[in-house]
Length: 67
Image (cartoon, rainbow, N blue to C red; front, side, top):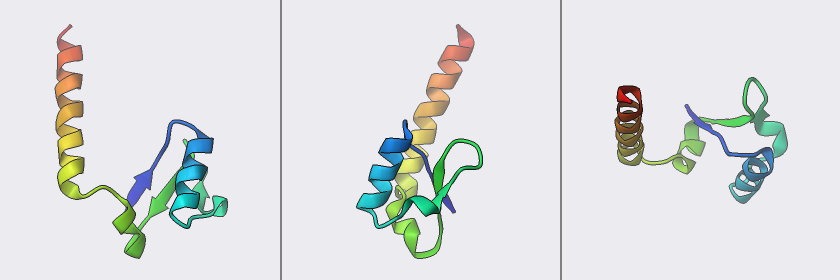
């Protein structure tokens, strides 16, 4: 499963429309997002990109924690 979030509900709806998702597919449990699985996983970033994102996040988190 992949969760797709956006900075705003408008941006999330625009992204979903572009990829064939409708607003009824938006999960409103917490911050609005799309839960994607199965064939829709092709819309999610490749694992290598996600790994790089986590590395950047961890680096930034570590640096800010040391301040």
